[in-house]
Image: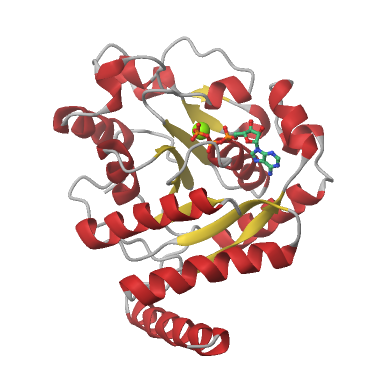
Length: 290
Ligand SMILES: Nc1ncnc2c1ncn2[C@@H]1O[C@H](COP(=O)(O)OP(=O)(O)OP(=O)(O)O)[C@@H](O)[C@H]1O
Ligand SMILES: [Mg+2]
């Protein structure tokens, strides 16, 4: 099949999904808490930086934004923001602190629920711990409009769980072939074993817009051909030396270089996420914010 035919097939499938969605309840960020997981097959593709900068942008768009650091074994969102939280998710799950006592303020009005690093028992949450987290989130007085979940990489139990409780899932890839094969494996497991159907691809560290298009096409072709699944193209982010500098300075790129081309890409992504009719599709029994 040629490229145009495959793209046509993807578009047709997408149309079918969209009209099915239109028949259902339309919910957008304005009306309901939007829970978005940011995930990847391969590590180090830029999830944490994307989450932090997106949160800053969304917050600037008057969306109350909470980051849940779900990289439970090796958390680092606080590190890239230069914050030193006193308590984290570990204390909440042990029943020692409430979420209110644990959530900290980040730059630009974002709220962060930090996680722990180097605590083995956090790398695979028990059902009881998941329930505690759900109940604590539901008990929050001041609810966010958007919750961004920064997952760890791979296909571990925790990664599956946090992707299942999210209504929307952003899969971050880079042009590296291993990043694509690992992302494909993640999508496959989430789709086949957990019936997750909606995936938005975000291509990070690209040199050109065309490179991003090619990466998306390769992935869409694979999911379409082997899984009969149409994925969405959320956007792309340019490779940016300023971001590397920002990480070293423990500052947000959004603060250090708001005018950089990669920030423009992220603003476009945020705009797209804020468009209405983002369907919430929680299949998990323990979905957040019931
Ligand atoms: N757009 C970009 N341009 C240049 N470098 C980038 C970009 N995005 C990420 N990086 C580099 O990749 C590194 C890893 O980014 P980050 O920690 O956000 O990835 P991650 O996917 O969260 O990793 P992990 O899987 O370990 O949690 C950053 O420290 C930075 O050096
Ligand atoms: Mg990370």
